[in-house]
Length: 119
Image (cartoon, rainbow, N blue to C red; front, side, top):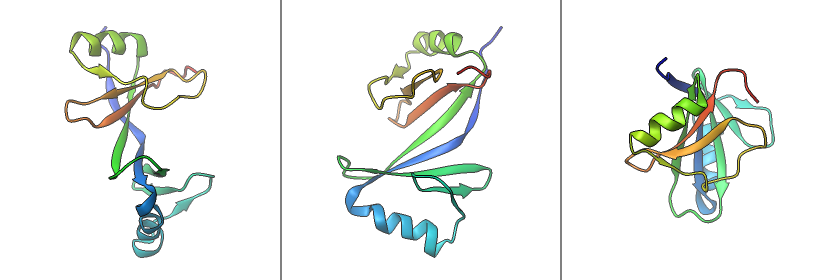
């Protein structure tokens, strides 16, 4: 079986503290995107969800993307064989989540998560 990948539903914008309020205002008040309920600001972005995270240690914004796979273990082996860098150190994940962080060659962070109903 060949491991499969597909885009996930979530995107995260990691925003420096000095740009955070203006960024929220842009999506909420200027573009008037639908603000979804929850503690962390999230906006409906077509069929995706855009999370806006304040990060004190950043100097510029970053985009993080979610990718789903049907077999997380096979995906880990495949990506390692392809020379793709895992970034398990990037941010803690919730206990029981079958997922890990990785970086594209251009340093875009991706959360690779199982879509097989695990965790």
